[in-house]
Image (tube, rainbow, N blue to C red; front, side, top):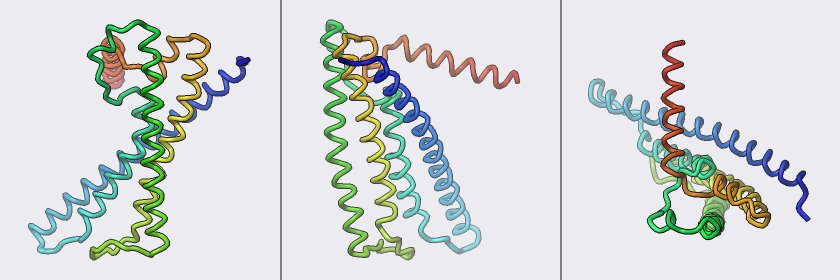
Length: 206
């Protein structure tokens, strides 16, 4: 029998996962901004001063890969991932809830495979002492490991979502299943945009 304490615990874990994922998104965004500034400085230095920092393109590619992997969990929690819903919106509620659950299962299986091979690649680079064939000679296990850890966090987040959605599906709480892994409706997106606009207005007023 499923106890209420289990629901509360899983809910608290998901909220913690969302908070951590939000921080990871901000850090990833900072990495992206830093790479943009580095590339801009490199271009201007080459144009006006005749020298280059070297490795700007390499570091920006690492930053892009790492920030992307660490943003996946937050995007999934916010249901921002793209799904084709041409037929989905016309299906009965129970069928659509089951499809939502199956989509989360499929995403979890894909992420486990991707993470396994990503971490295996990072481990191989560590064992072999592989370095990038560039002037920086970056040890490849560093960016690969950070990239893989982002994917691993995505797996953990999807696992928490899947357990919570499974319990909700078993108990017949179809609304909760939709809140966890369903396709966002046009009304939900409009409400979120309105809330974002209100925050901007209040911020300007302040």
